Image (cartoon, rainbow over all chains, first blue to last red):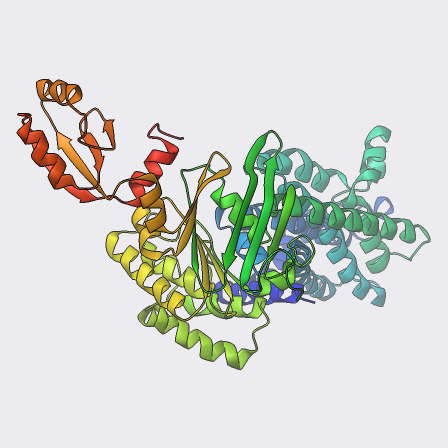
Amino acid sequence: MRARKIVRRNWLVHWRSRRSSLLLSVLTPVMFLSAMGLGLGSLVQERNAFGGVEYAAFFATGILAASCMQTGFFSATYPVMSKITWQRNYEALVASPLSVRDIFLGELSWMGIVLAQLAIPFLAVMTLFGFVHSFAAVLAIPVVILLGLACAAATFAFTATLQTDEPFTWMFRFIVTPLFLLSGTFFPIAELPSWAQVLAHLTPLFHGVELVRMLTLYDLEVTALWHLTYLLVLLAAGIMLGIRNLERRLLP
Amino acid sequence: MTPSASSGSDALIVASGLSKRFESLIAVDGVEFEVRRGEVFGFLGPNGAGKTSTMRMIGCTSPRTSGELRVMGMDPATHASEIKARLGVVPQADNLDIELTVRENLEMYARYFDVPRDTAAERIDELIDFVQLRDKATSKVDPLSGGMKRRLTIARALVNRPDLILLDEPTTGLDPQARHLVWERLYRLKQSGVTLVITTHYMDEAEQLCDRLVVMDKAKIVAEGSPRQLIERYSTREVLELRLTDPARKKLAASLDGLAERAEWLPDRVLLYTPSGDTALASIHERGIETDSALVRRATLEDVFLTITGRSLIE
């Protein structure tokens, strides 16, 4: 697969510019979990609302999924825009034997690696804090990567159609932030009004969060298949639309 | 590789009835041309004439709307990867990878072309010397001057030892020293037998480099030939440029007969197209017309270009 050449290039750049990123990706969950999880968690004595687990563990799983979603969204906005318009890396790539498909899948694979670099240390820290209740938790890693990639592919498809970066501002404000807050990250969606619960069911983060909680805190249920299907379909649609839009953009 | 049906085997590019349309805009309108192996072929024309669109169709980065196009005997619509593997492309604006060093830019690009690692290392060493960037090999791209970036882009276009190199305005925006260095390198490539296709709106560039060229205007090819042929066909051997006072201008206008094949009246100058500028100037003085200044020069492609595409500003 020629797409791996794209991954190599990104790896080289990434390794040089952010050698400290591993430290950062461990520190972030440590700070998040100690400050928010334990701090806020000590005030929340309620357990029934969180399926019988302590709030900090509930919160940690939500934040893990939400961070991956956010990283997925972000990595397909400004960095991709730059390679399309500002630095025009892709223009140089399509002049080589690489196809648009190679470029798209290569970039997406790289985003998957970035997500793994976020998810693995995060889950390790969660384990140290005692927030992981099952060995199945290992599977939460591919799940949050899938969640992040599904968001990234869809965003990539959108970015490929843009002439300016202006829409990103409102995308983060009116799409990413509400998703972050209202998909069951910080509290169960049962607390929301019923119309908002319906909306929450439509968001990718809700499905990701549900899956992660089943794998780390609760028991697996059949509904897991539905959550998984949702994310896989979103990813497949994002890839198809993304390749099509990027082809239109790079090969006018 | 299938040999192209319409021409001899030494034709690297064959286009006929080639068109490109963007919604309502016709960028290229039924052009026909042939580029032969080993020559430097130029597309000359004002901005927006369709040069870049034509180049992009050849480079397989813009699908044609209609007509026929064969590049090295293959159809860009069906064999893009195979064609691109044997092409070198120097785009209008540099698109180097600014997060990599000079050398890494070449290494990475060689990888995209599947050049084996050892071969690539050797070739990149040669290329860095060829474009005179030895001192900068480990430098990042961003701080390089415009001329250096251009040379690096040219080196990058050579990592796959292409049979055909497409250069879209290779020296636009460079200072004279940098331009001459680029020209000299391109001339060396030509001598080594590589086929070059160049777009430019610099007439001196076209005259220096091109064996044959076509002039494009408003999406069509309006003239074709070698620089010499075009000058003979569309201009005279020499041009006499005169600066005159207003009375002298009127006087000249009244007694122009037999002085020149064609005269062009510009606000600041009068251009007389003539086989011999000195003879024409002598007879002007014989007729008692005073000239503020007079310059006899050889006709250039610029005269051809302005004759064909007109003097009005195209924006």
